[in-house]
Image: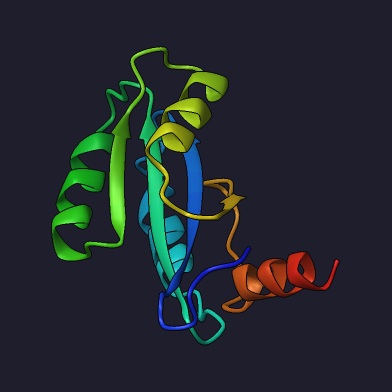
Length: 119
């Protein structure tokens, strides 16, 4: 993870989903509340597998409010194709995979980065 000192490092948080309207807002709140180490920036990519319960509409609306959040189309509708779609678009030198049904401590991603740097 070497980069010029004045260039921010990027972490890409990725998550696949399908029909998660009941959980997507809480996931976005938790993911976007991450406090990163100094010099790091984050993007959150959520691959929607053609949800028909309003999940996609909620993601689109939320992504217009926060540029860090991006919805990714997953016409394959399964986890692996969603993850691959996110990875293909990710610009982070570090990728952290999260689950929609989990709430994360605000320092979860920072601890992942610190552990990676230490090891």
